[in-house]
Amino acid sequence: MNKPLLTVGLTLSLLVPLCAQAGAKEDFQKIYSDAKSAQKDAGDFKWTTTSSRLKAAESAAESGDYDKAKTLAAEALKLAQESVDQRKTQAEAWRKAVIGG
Image (cartoon, rainbow, N blue to C red; front, side):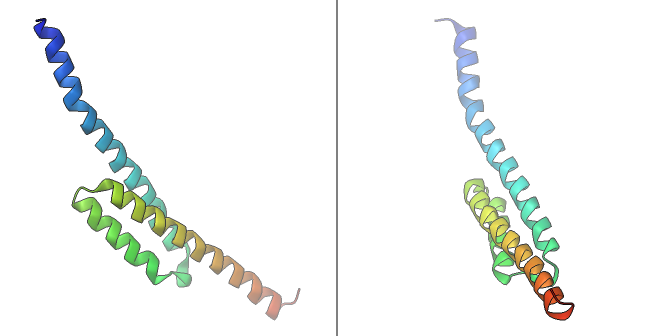
């Protein structure tokens, strides 16, 4: 048996799961960061459901379940973006009502 080839094969087989996990972690961190930023941009129009999703995502990440954390962070990002849209819509509606249109 060729020991160097066996060593390389065994090393690669052990590294593949680590690489996959690192990608999920990085994906989670990016989405989570985007969601936090969007939530901040929502200002007074922050939705409470966004905060609860972010907390759940953070908790899942701390336990090492990055797939679940990524899913929850993506939900939080969508909610945060919708709250930003609501803020913008309300600002426009206010302008039209007060200033005219």
